Amino acid sequence: MAVFRSGLLVLTTPLTALVPRLLPILTSAARLVNHTLYVHLQPGMTLGGPTQPQASPLQATFEVLDFITHLYTGADLHRNLDIRILLTNIQTKSTFLPVLSSVQNLAHPPEVVLTDFQTLDGSQYNPVKQQLERYATSCYSCCPQLSSVLLYPDYGTDELSSESQNATSSSTIRPATVLGRSPKQPVRGYHRGAVGGTFDRLHNAHKVLLSVACVLAQERLVVGVADKDLLKSKVLPELLQPYAERVEHLNEFLVDVKPSLTFDIVPLLDPYGPAGSDPTLEFLVISEETYRGGMAVNRFRLENGMEELTLYQIQLLKDQSHSESEEDKVSSSSFRQRMLGNLLKPPNQPEVPRGLYVIGLTGISGSGKSSIAKRLKNLGAYVIDTDTLGHRAYAPGGPAYQPVVEAFGPDILHKDSTINRKVLGSRVFGNKKLLKILTDIVWPVIAKLAREEMDLALSKGKALCVIDAAMLLEAGWQNMVHEVWTIIIPESEAIQRIIERDGLSEAAAHSRLQNQMTGQQLVEQSHVVLSTMWEPRVTQRQVEKAWNLLQKRIHQAH
Image (cartoon, rainbow, N blue to C red):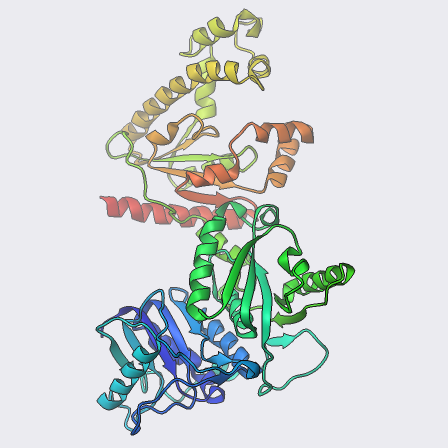
């Protein structure tokens, strides 16, 4: 059967009966759609009857909100799919309006419409499929050549997993009050509300948070997106999507799921954000881990003469496939950790000896670059240490010795005529003009020596070479490597390592980092990123993953 890039799944089974069957239904849908799957809830709708069904409002209850969470939880098993539950027909009691009076445009017009609706004999019954296609095109902008598939009996009716059967066992959304609530209890609608987060690589836990906020809001939703200082404490902040990219993905999702709302997407620069300052807001959607932040927002509002916000707390989605160094919830930080070792952009095509593949290994001081180089050497790489090449270049009779002495004078020499690199370093430190004179002499010499080492590696039968160079990018040596691999760690950890390793003061360690490219700047020019901030065995797994993926790339290139 054909596989489609985008699809629309129309769910017609009553929610209570549907929840236990969600996983098999989503699995069936995932066999047919490989990019974007829209979900439209119309429980109780009959296809194949005497009249063409029309979209009708679905009362927003806590059962509906819980169902949205269950669906996105199930969707996490199919991370290749961008699943979006459409909310236009889900309405709070106070705002019942005609549903879909005009056809709603979607960012990815569906090429196929699917349904869980069961025909009596389980066949692909044409009148049912025709009604399904007419229903889909009356609600949403679909591709002109729309296909249709009845998923039943593919998703089956028996042998449900225990995980599926327990799906309704707990409620996932609640107002943050001591009052209980029943699944059938209608959800109150509000004119304006807020939700906030980092929203990096928009995932299913984000979608639950945003969807609940969209159901509650009737006019305007303020979405705060963490930026600048609020990003510093994040895990692997260098791998965060840029603010503009996060906003772009967020806006597309929100406009798709509820286009009738006005969305104000704003940068979140302090813990309170608009929720702490906008007197027109009425509610705030938070997660379990940001509940205290929500309470702090309300205290801040009261102190400034504003009414408290009604807080809606969402339970965290559990990540069933997290590793030991990852969080047990669905989170962007886990996704960023999974990027470590992956190829982030296509390799360069450098002028290097034929038959040799060259990696440039770099990172800020204290990042653990040398330990990664040793691990790569143990896996079979030929490692070229540019520090060693630098010592050769500076040695009496070395290619950089005479030019450096002529440029900086004989007072940089020890009594044995070797260059005193500490004296030379103090001479150029903080002086950009003198530093450039030195690097203009030394960097081309080291590059020439590195190319000689490449020839030597090839003569020894090595096909993969690693250039270990702290100043790889500053020196412009990326033009002689296929891939730049960067090691990143938090600056605070780097400072601690420099203090312990080199005996420097904290100020001196900080000053050293200030004179280097930042981890963020390095990552922007990198093909592969690794981190040594976890236990050695985690680092080893990262390196082995990166190495194995590299071997596949080299094999495919040949």
